Image (cartoon, rainbow, N blue to C red; front, top):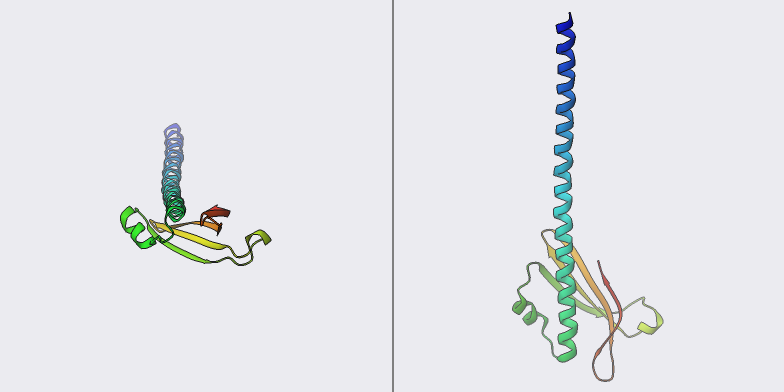
Length: 133
């Protein structure tokens, strides 16, 4: 009779250990996936912001900037798309401003870097608004 109780206790302990190990494994797998996606998001944000800063710097130096040539010379890790459009629904001081949006796609994760800017008398960029997300 004692052997039966000991066997049942041992089986219960093994069951609890097995469930614990399974739970820890699943938790570790989930954390790894989250860490990978966070890394991809940071990489995409870094590329978008870097390219935006390069465009700002180059456009300040050269008014006839060709963004496609710039993309070709940099060879980024991610797929980058750039568009410039007229600013709408912005605050009063941003009337007549343009919006430059850089979208970076890295390992199925998208990041955007956006600025609203105006050109001053010397044809230099004056940034009104900047956001990276």
